[in-house]
Amino acid sequence: MDEPGIFSSLFEPIENILHSVLSGLYFLTEQLGFGSYGLAIILLTVLIKILLYPLTVKQLKSMRAMQKIQPELKKLQEKYKDKPQIMQQKLMQLYQKEGVNPMAGCLPLLIQMPILMAMYYTLFNFNYGDVEPSFLWLPSLSQTDPLYILPVLSALTTFLQQKLSMTESTQQMKMMMTIMPLFIGFISLNFPAGLVLYWVTMNIVQIAQQFYMNKKEDKNSDKETITDGDDNRKKR
Image (tube, rainbow, N blue to C red; front, top):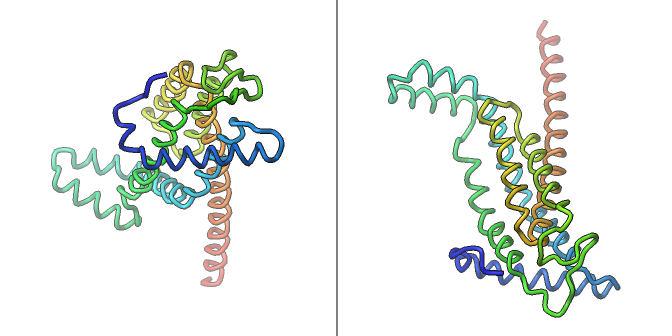
């Protein structure tokens, strides 16, 4: 299978590290008596997501904050659509008032992208050597899934991951939640099973992290509501 893109050389240093770690994790499973590249891919993906969790938290918090002020943003954009300079000033005032940085969600993503892309290139053309990289129902991780289970899971987990990250659904977001999972599922039909396994595992871990964060935020909101209620009663 050919290299998936001319930009792979940009991520080569990280790719080499990931290749070594993946090989090490396979060696670990081998020492435990059940050498499995499939399990090694899952372990490496979980490890990456754990290491990137602080950045994921910042990114998701920024996304949620921006979604919460979307109604105000739309009002300002509509009101000052013919006065771009005033609209820009009003938007900046709104950001400052709500403590929102519109660029805060981009930085964590930019930091994560080289690692995620290097993982993509690592698995797209990974050399399994003399080992037959079978896993569960998959005859080979270097070939496509003959039962199409992983492509379907890639679409479903992408949909769930997007749904959990959104607090509000605009028409554009609803379209994205439909188009993106279908697109991911479609391209996964032609990708090596090892790469799709990585994507599905990454989505599942992301879903678990977002579910945990949402629960934590809901608890904090409930505490703030109770505290505000107590303060109001004391003032009376």
